[in-house]
Length: 241
Ligand SMILES: Nc1ncnc2c1ncn2[C@@H]1O[C@H](COP(=O)(O)OP(=O)(O)OP(=O)(O)O)[C@@H](O)[C@H]1O
Image (cartoon, rainbow, N blue to C red; front, side):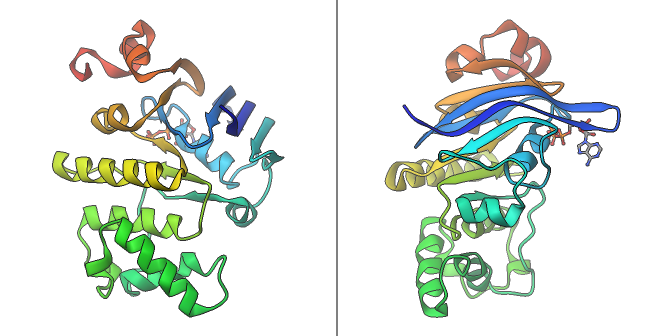
């Protein structure tokens, strides 16, 4: 299967601290790929390098056949990488629909077209009935889905999801999992997610990369990765299995 994203030996240092250390992996086109690991493992730094917030100190990032490392976040987004943030940050005073229209306008010049696209996205994310509400009035599960909707409205080929299950109850986690599965199945969109909620990771991911101190300690099929002694020792613990 062709790789949509190829990360090749990237590193990022913050003063003395090596946050990401010669990391390499490939995300196959059309798949859901998860990155897990303890706090401080370097997952968000990895996302920030893919999304253009930081340039890697070394190594390359290739997306859809072209180098994207070192491009600005806006350019990376225009190439087709959409992202959510760990701390959800919609425009609070705008309606749910207007928040999504802002994303849709990246590739559409007519507000009418952007609105039609935003409504399609809102239906997929189970938010259509709440489109008139102010974003600030939403509950956490709704805000998390709005965050995904805003990223999706930019028509990405690759969706980067940063802890979209954090703080959700199991029933809301399962709802998000089934929405993302359906989205991937029906549109073929590739999804790269950082996630601590193993229930969601195991239900979604075709492959998993486990990071620890900036480096990979395991990569492969979920069933193999969660049985890897190094993963159990540094991250999962027996209770997660
Ligand atoms: N802008 C920065 N300046 C200095 N140090 C940073 C910066 N961003 C991250 N770090 C450090 O880099 C390391 C990796 O952090 P990162 O946020 O990437 O980890 P993470 O795996 O995403 O953790 P979490 O699961 O808690 O979100 C940490 O030690 C963190 O303190």
